[in-house]
Image 1: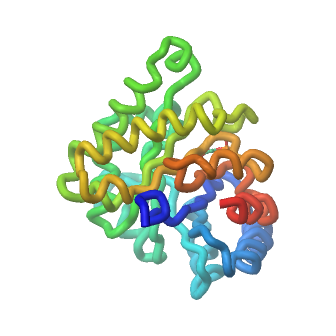
Image 2: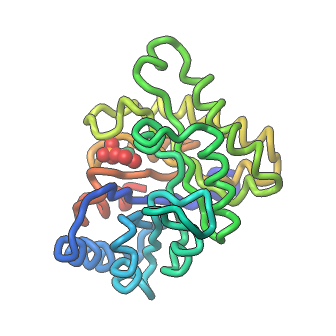
Image 3: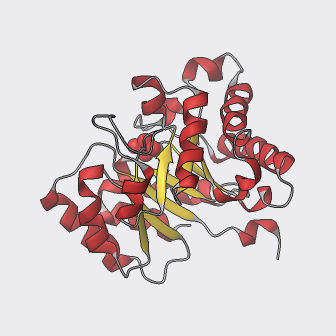
Length: 252
Ligand code: PEP
C-alpha cells in the first residue's frame, strides 16, 4: 500500500452562520440517509447552537460533526465564547481552526490559531487547521511563503501531535467566489504542505489529511480529489444541500 491509499478521504461541511432548526432537520436527515457505503468519511461543522441537533440527528450514523471555532480558554469570563470541552460535551470530533473568515474578520493571528489548535487537541478534538493566501499574496508570488508560515506556526507548538490534525488549504480568493483553484494549482500547494508535515514528522506527516476548500462543487470535485495530495474537501456553500454534499463525497 502506498501513502496515498492509506489516507481515507474526508469531506467536511462548513455551514458557517447558516441554518435554522427546520432547515437543518431536512439537511441532516438527507445527509444521514445518503451517507452509508461511501468511500469517504463525512462530517458537518455546524453553528454552536445547533450542536445538540446535529448530535441527535447523526448519532449512530457514519457522519461526524464538529464546531467552527473554539475559545483559547477553558472556562470563565469570556462572554460569547465556546470551549473545547463544551464541543466535546456534544460529542464533536472536529473543530475548524483558523478559517480565513476568523483570521480576517476576528483578527486571529498565526499565534492564536496555533494556540487554538493546541487547545482543540487538549480537549480531545481534531482541529481542521485552515491555511490559504489572499489574491494579492498569490499575485505577488507569496503563496508558498504564506501557507508555510501559517502551517509552521501551528506545527511548531504541537510537539508530537502532528499526526492528530487535519489541514485544509483554502485559497481566500476561492472561498465563496465560485472561483476554484485548478487541481494542478491546488496539488502544488498541497505538495508543499505535505513536505512541511513530513519534514516535521517523517512518521506521522505522510498520514495527515490535506483537504482543499474553496468553491468545491459536485462538478469540480472529482478532478481535485484525484490529485495525490488532496485527501478531501472542506465545503462551504455546497454543504448546505444534502444532494450536493453527497455528490462531492461520492466523487471522492
Ligand atoms: C469555506 O468557507 O470553508 C469554503 C470552502 O466555502 P465555499 O465552499 O463556499 O467556497
